[in-house]
Image (cartoon, rainbow, N blue to C red; front, top):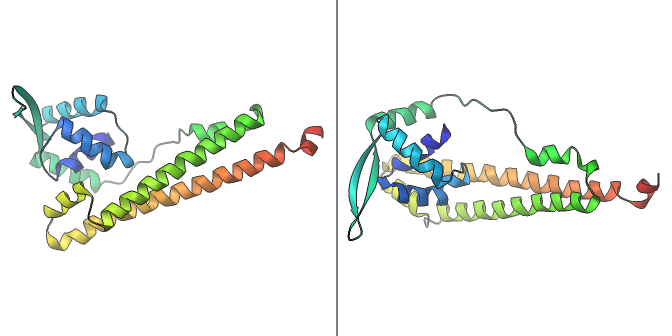
Length: 199
């Protein structure tokens, strides 16, 4: 259900078409909640049926039409209620750590590849999130600038700082995963040493 609240969050800034929402989603919310277009468009239609969004046909190009969505008062109320409701944590489904628990079944080279892929992925994500913070701090993030323009001046600092706080948390998590991956590489090397194999 978090997809609908991610979409509502984007629509609190301005009305958007499904295409615009998918683009904005990819450059902002997708850093914390992944969803392909095949999930976004059906959810928008469902939310419109539930009166959380209002949908209107607009001209698009010389002959085309698109549906533009805007958040309704019911949608704003639903988003605010979700934000003020305690989060329910789901049980883990973590294939990386599941596989790590059984690395004795893997060849050392495959085990190393597994750990290196984990390190590379989280290194890449850390760089993305660092770049996002730079864009937030440097006022070059288009979506944030639009949100701030529509936000009362006394609330702008909170709007900015909570976003930065979120990405700092993601960076800290990535750094923990990178260190865990490096620890894994050292463990694989120590367990694959000739003295261990011969014993």
